[in-house]
Length: 325
Image (cartoon, rainbow, N blue to C red; front, top):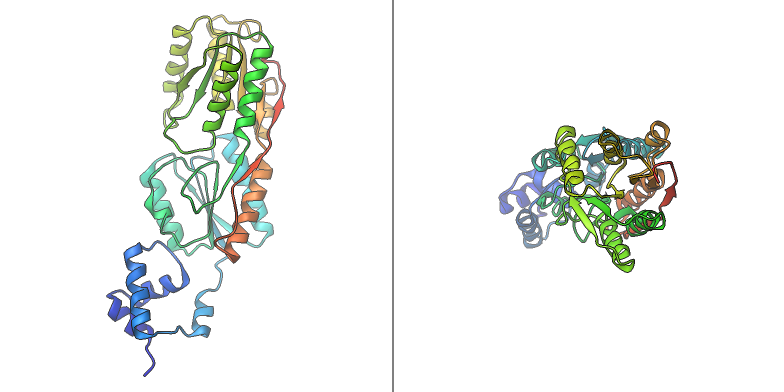
């Protein structure tokens, strides 16, 4: 007598729904559960009904996006661009605003998988989330290293670090400070710091790096930046990790009596369209945000066809010369 899905579920000690999810690689599943189901299928010589499986595997045409915030112009433009491209390709989006909270990110991840999204694009900065390892779902990351199996789309952070640091050095800055996220955070953005440090040393200058937690608010950042000026009153160049921080530093520096760019030269990072409209004078490294969105969606669709497809992709950046250098 031919084995049925009920028989597999009973032998594996799981529900029929779990067996279906294992067969169709849907939702979060532990390695232990997957093995139990596969072992039961093999023992019973179970072969799924092709017609039923095809019905079950109908695409939801939903893609989940998990990012830290939509408040930051970089993420706002990135998400808007991806949504537009996905819509053109027949997909609707569900957005998770993780606010750099790992528990919130886990909940969004589980909820999105429960909605049986066809794929995920992620860019939140939390680490050690095991659900990604067992997601059984096409996933693409933007500027974040999730695990070895998930390709990363990023701008050329190393090139950006060289461009920013060299510009400040070429404009006679000697005490140049760089701010960056926690070094233990696995993200290509750390290459900006490596490029900054290497360029500084090659020019006989001492690197000065301040680590800034992504989770702190505006007031905490205000105290953080004021402390930098207190500890290094002779600072004449600053390379900030993003444009919002660069704008805040410029305001604080002006309040403290620094003339920009005569006394202090500032370079930001990101160059989102909104930022360049509102802060056209800010010198910054421009990430190709729309191109990154395009490549992420393209790669995700490729992975929907073949979940082993796709490799890391790095896209060149460019310098926007404003009046802060």
